[in-house]
Image (cartoon, rainbow, N blue to C red; front, side, top):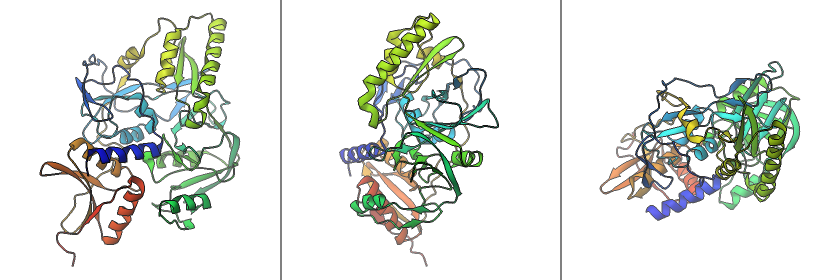
Length: 451
């Protein structure tokens, strides 16, 4: 199976997940002379200036204390890539969604980043323009903000996955009407039909466990049939992949589930453009409107410009309108100063916190070796090592994981999935790969038969 076929399959996969990776390059995201772009092409680049800060071991990603009228939280950070890193692993470790990290680092391949590349961790956020009460969810940047009643000066923030086109997450003010740990999933008829069209059949009820897409915790909203819940597919956080529900990383929903109460308000909004004052500087955070509101982008931009003109007049400040236009074009989710003579993105990168790479990224897939007595699957063969690595990385981030690795075979590279216990498990995995990637695979029997 060759390069063109794989590119078509990955393109279909990316399209399914609702990713948008075509964004403007941010200067300073690399510390090496070369990088691989999203098509794994090697591209030259001038080395970025050396960072003089000392590295720190950790950074706050979820809980922040608010002072006075503060509306921007967090800080930017950078970290150097190590072997086996992927955007999904880095994003989850640092409390980011896939969207956060992919649009902030458009020149780096998400599944096969070049070792030594310096990656930006956009851990700075502008609070939505909404009451600081209960849960506020901004669909535009796929991020949830929780304001605890018992801690009025604190805010928690978590990345989320939301409904894809055709299954959009509803907007408006509602509340939490029920909470359930270890929930069962009663499969809606509409999802039954969707799977049936692909040749797959679902049971009427899916019990709690690794195959339950609700994860370990679920909170029913006042909007009928909509939930805030965990997931068994954490790679989808920061994407439009659900059937309308709001998904959180398993570790994040556990925190929110324990803190949230029945009756708590939940306000769901769509604000792609956010502004904030911080240390006498005006910042603009721009996000690409989600697909449902893409046709209103010009209207949303006009509303923003009207708001900024009012700020300019009221505060008697001069706004760099060219900078504003550039920030909107990039829509990279990074709060950027927009007053005249304010620091540019390169300056922000230079002053970002430099993080030590953790010894292990949280829940990074660990693939076991395949023994002679194990079943396995030949997924595909490639002439290009990086495409084979990309396919293996994508499979390793399925939910549940499909353990995979690239293996050199003569002049090509194979992607082998496994180990698996028996033929039944192999057939189940083969069905999943066919459903998700439209690929036919080859089961590999154990070299040494099991007694």
